[in-house]
Image (cartoon, rainbow, N blue to C red; front, side, top):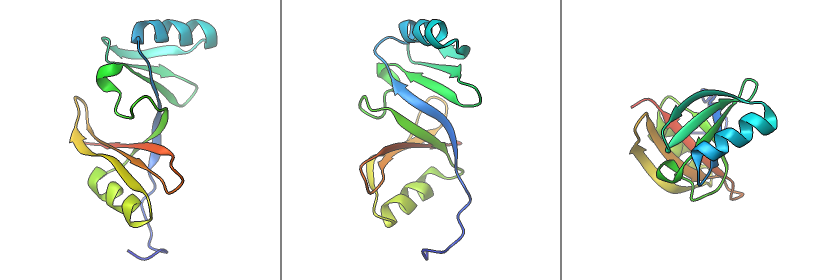
Length: 121
């Protein structure tokens, strides 16, 4: 793909924050910042409404980044997005895998920033 090829834009679906205790993190962000809970998946994951952006609290079972906060981009094809990142100098941390709710992968941009890519199964 050429440098100038048109790419369908991804969108940030959430900002992922790995936490050791999802319930405690929900209480913290709800009381400290007033964020409303969108949903909770036990001790695995919680989504909070952060004013148009979702704060995703990932418990240890859902921590795909190794404890690193990351923007999570929703893309139509996870494998293609990973390939595009690698082609442009990024690297793969975790290859695409089926999660409980979607396909996801973890990559780094050329500057070392971690990003999560996720999309339909």
